[in-house]
Image (tube, rainbow, N blue to C red; front, side, top):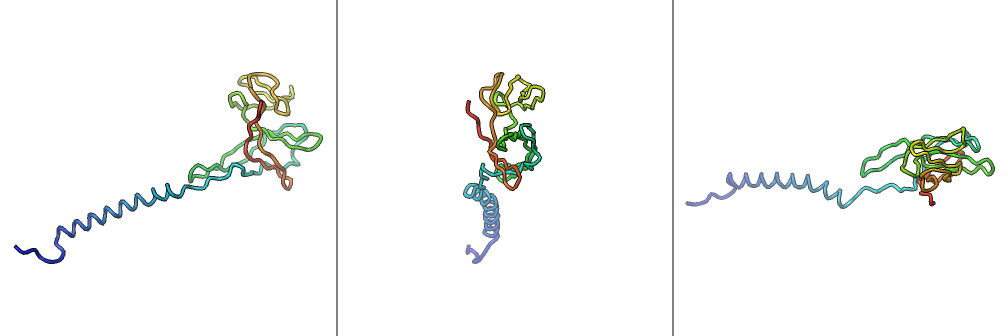
Length: 164
């Protein structure tokens, strides 16, 4: 029996199936290749954020300031609320910004006005106004933010681990 020339039903269906498979594989492989070959650019850790007006700070009086910082996780950018304990020195007007976690187990501490020190209520670690350990199980001084003043605004960078 002689085969008809041209496109028969079987070849047409195979062509459609192979064409759909090609479209599906391309739809899946394209984004996967883009993800693997072109990863998102991570933000630099040294980005500075505005933490408030310096003129509002009282000398030798620690104040907890609240600010917002952007955190990049892959392609997701999240605005997070952060805090810092800021101390403006009385003499040279230098500003120190402490990270809000105790160096023992990362608990939140506060300024104890009666005793003039920072107190971690969980394990009773105490720190003086310069961040040095006075008592308790804390192994090292309080960690600090990189801090600078620009146009009267306090700018905070990344947290630097303090050494014992």
